Length: 319
Ligand code: 2P0
Image (cartoon, rainbow, N blue to C red; front, top):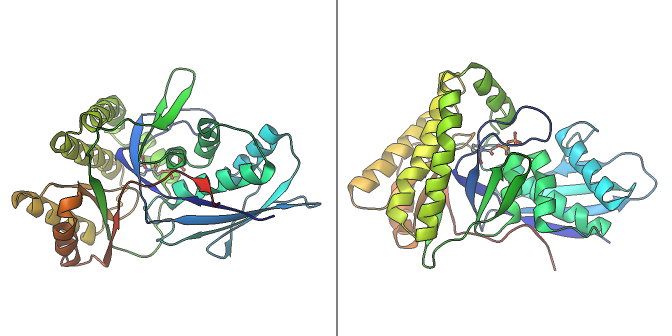
């Protein structure tokens, strides 16, 4: 029987950038995100009896999932946990731009893991499944949880789970889409290059844990005016380190949208920008300011359209 899994991308309020040396795709710094309702990956999974290979399509295109690659490793880990030899046939679609800095790998791996685990009848906790998702894409581990989630590397273990938030935090994310195409440089490749050649990489590794802890505290206290500047600082520090290595995800429209966000603040609107491994600008704001933020972004040259998202559900199997 076909299993259908649903997951949403997440946007980091405190960014992950850089990996621990060695295997396991373990982040070098703690991160904290908001899961975005309204942007959806839908993934169908069937088990393939009597075949030797897994199959994966994303938006109808066949994707390699050979052993040793990101997806191949995730499939293999799931088989080992379930003590199964089954192969998977996975068909995934996104209703938002794929591989362009809108975290389609996060929702993609989260839906894939939840769907494959259900197809296998695997009895595992959400935390366990999230750590399998991390092998595919570290940010995917956060999309297993609703609302706000964190991924925190420790000395011997990695912690992943929901983040407590004060009641009444009416946070919304307005995405200014600036390009419908895929990005030129993957996050993994970008991270490697930055770790090797950016003169600011060590400063990023040293400073990111402080920003993460402060973001966590501001959310817990429901202090939006403290949260906003921290969110922007995390993104700008990450991109400063990237730019020093020639890893430039910004396009002209990215800077135009960022200028719009600063102008909105001058007008007394609580809006803060964050950017990921792509040209889009995600604006963190409050529910009551969404209309003004959308209008200003849609009037910004180079902004193609906007998407509005509230905190969303974690990855799940469709009932
Ligand atoms: C994040 N990003 O925390 C950061 C901020 C992009 C910028 O996680 O190499 O696709 O597959 O673990 O998770 C995007 O990177 O990277 C990402 P891999 P991933 O959301």
